[in-house]
Image: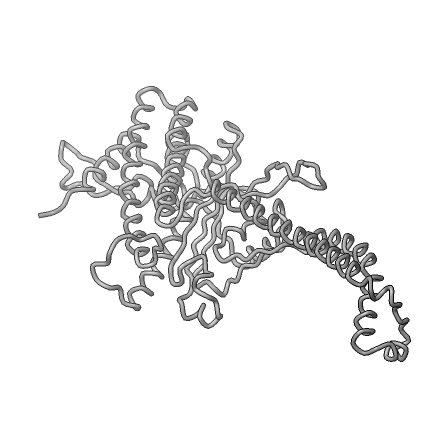
Amino acid sequence: MAVYKDREAFIPYRRTDLIELCIEDGQLDAVEAQKFREFCSILSAYYHFQFHAYLESLKDNYAPFDPDADTKYRVEVSSQDRAAMESMLVADFKSILERANYIPLSQESLQRAFEDRSLIELKTHVDFNDFEQMVCYCRGDIDKAAWVKKFLRKRKKTINVFERVVLLIKFKDESYFASQKTKPDKLKFIPGKMYVYLYKNIPKFDIELLFPNVKTSMTWKDRILFGIPAIGAAIPLVLRVLPQLLLVISVILFITVGPEYLKQLKQSTPSQEEVRNIMPVLVAILSLALTLGGFAFKQYTNYKSKQIKFQKNVTETLFFRNLASNVRVFQSLIDAAEEEECKEIILVFYHLLTSQTPLTPEQLDNRIEAWMDEKFGTQIDFDIHGPLHNLEVIRGKIAQDGSSTNTPDIAILTRDSQGYCHLLSLDEALAVIDYIWDKAFLYSL
């Protein structure tokens, strides 16, 4: 089976649409098409039931770390139990992400992304030492066109974007931040808690803005742009003030130490008329000083206004791209994983069902990828191993003479000694999945 660096395993169709796309392929007659729909319907219900259990486990293990919790604990969770729950949560979370066809982003990959900028010119810093746990996954690595303002003009630029980004962060406890001399009221998060985010359409090189502990500042370019006008305006003001300033110094020295000291300094002695006219000079200097101070204050307020405006733009961008936070992320990802697993099984089941000869996993993988490309122009890197395993472990009984008591369990899919995949007939597969679904809520007494 082929390996692609520019493709992902994500299938960009809804499960219900994919079922109809298979039927519209024309390989099944009307009766078979209806049975195929029924098989897919029961299969989806069975996996929904399974994934609901995964969701409940995630929620239970997340409870002690939820910063949004508004419920009380029945019993206080011990530190040992918290550590075990944290470990289980992170492991299950990664498993669900991978089943939803997300791709992990390592800390090294994130650091490389932090070194570049795409849309937002801002100096940023993320301290990974603040984290006890950090998990980052993405899906949909694509290029998008965006309009970027540059040199007072808007230009079209192609940027690399993640269609989906999932971020889980567990911050260290309060003692760590106390040792860093960080004031609690300055933190934008609760130490010891776990934050989970799901975002859409995030530029790859601005991904650091998703981190709650990101620190921002203006770039050197912006500081220079602010500083040069201030210096340029200050120079003529200083040149205007300097002659009067020297005169004031001379007058002060003349009054305090006398003319003889000025001669020793080789400084010209001010005349009596200049001494009498000192007040107008002082008023002029004071006016110029106020003008210079006012200009400096204006430049400072402009700088702060740009910072506030920029932060507002960042906040609005993240707000409109946020799909879910904390426990609601688990619900979204469980739904995505359930959809992906069902879609993969449906594609494998359909192509084995309509194939005239048995297929090896490699042949089946290539057939599905070619079918998606030729029929719909959609290129994917299909993961064949997961759905084959899932069909192999779906085992049930087929009733014979109205009874299934003494019949053995059989799998929907088996492999022979040469590695070829063999599928039950559509009627038999439907009977097996129906048997399993009927037993899902059956409890022995």
